[in-house]
Length: 101
Image (cartoon, rainbow, N blue to C red; front, side, top):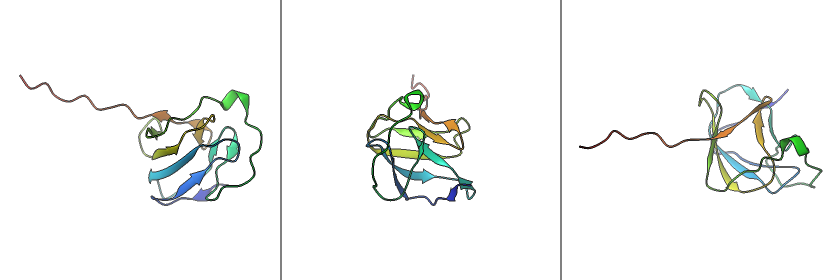
């Protein structure tokens, strides 16, 4: 149902200003959405955002799935929530560095 996306691909939301770049993705077909509408490789007409999926994105943040098997960099902020195959992505948390006593 989705498309096969390669690392480096830029995607734009169809309902808000969100743009992301794929950094790490599996070789499987993925359905990537933002605000409830499919993301595309080109800007298009803006539709209406799903109010349940309006969590917003932050520029410069990396978004990952629960297992961190895929990663997207937000290059333009917007109002929509990014989802892959129906699962919302979260902001990647910084890794804890070991203390240097």
